[in-house]
Amino acid sequence: MAGRRAATKAIDWVAFAERVPPNQRAMFNSLKTRSDSIAAKLASLPEKPATIDWSHYRSVVAKAGMVDEFEKKFAALTVPEPVDTQTAKIDAQEQEASKTAAAYLEASKARIAEYEKALEKFRNMIPFDQMTIEDLNNTFPETKLDKAKHPYWPHKPIADL
Amino acid sequence: MLSRLVLTSNPVLLLLLSLVQASRSFHQSSQSLAPVPPLPEKGGKVRHGIFPEELFTLLYPKTGVTGPYMLGTGLLLYMLSKEIYVINHETFAAASIGAVVIYGIKKFGPSVAAFADKLNEDKVAKAQEVKDQAMASLAQGIEDEKKEQWRVEGRHMLFDAKRNNVAMLLETNYRERLHMVTNEVKKRLDYQVQLQNLHRRMEQEHLVNWVEQSVIKSITPQQEKESIAKCIADLKVLAKNTQARATV
Image 1 (cartoon, chains in turn yellow, green):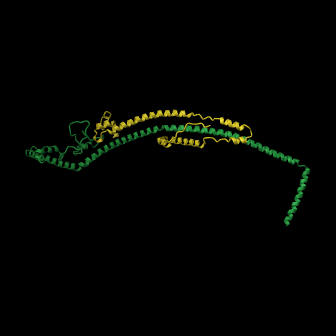
Image 2 (cartoon, chains in turn brown, blue; image 1 turned 60 degrees about the vertical axis):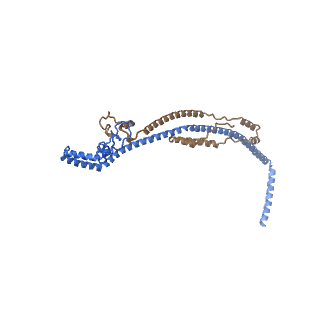
Image 3 (tube, chains in turn purple, orange; image 1 turned 180 degrees about the vertical axis):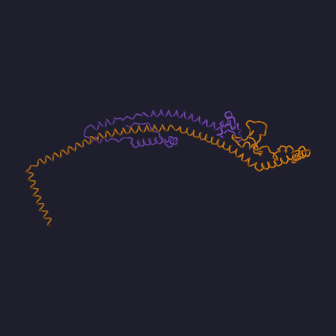
């Protein structure tokens, strides 16, 4: 009667909570409450069911052999363990998540590289008070005045002054 | 070439050019170096506003400190005496204009220079601020990305939690089934026991009733009359006894 199930891993909810980004906190909270309720329900059920006092029944019940028959059948009975349909799905989800996570990490690394490049540019820049206008235009292309589009000084629309 | 940063839309450009105050800088060397080395803050030194210091340094070894002054005085006297420079009314005009100009420059020069410098510095400070903000935001962005990467690493916890939930649900279900089986069997046995008890009780009651009925039936009318007479006699005796006791 003592079937066995896959052992549950101890989950560190505190560390888990740290890793949750703020925009997913609600989902995390609902997951936690659900998990806690399931755990509470599990804890409330005793592991082994109450044993049946066969000798008492044997002495009380008049019908001969009934108790013995019950006892035999009861001992022979095995309760089937519930079939686990979800773990495979969860594993599949985990694979998916790993893939998207890898893609996200790649994108994140690319972004970090971009930021690093821009930071390098800023760090290697000559100080402003030693720049010429040419240097300024080279460093910040957006400051270059378009002399073709606005041939007359101030080379930009008056409203932008 | 102006080597100070001249950002666009600087309306003080002309003002700067007209100042002789040593707040503008000159390109000292004729060589061109790349990258441009930092340029001097102040221009070449001059004495009395016009005469460059190099003249004095040139003449010092030969003529000492007073050399250039003697040269200047001599030149001036030569030009006056030989009438190379003729004194006329223009001379007085030049002198007065020169006096006023020099007075104006000496009095207001520094403040105007400071004002122009401040304008420039504001522009530089703004640019610097933009640069600092950009660098700070970039650094912050890098930090945030790293944090997000760290967060992603913890994704296995979610799936562990889910698997745990599933396992716990299965175990709960299994235990419920066990309990149900036991309870059902117990209920059946209890039912049998209760049934037996009920039977016995009913039999008992029925037997008792039947015995009672038969006893009542067996009492013949003769016996009934005798027993009633006996009861009345007993009652009379009892009444007498009680009356006797009451009066005593």
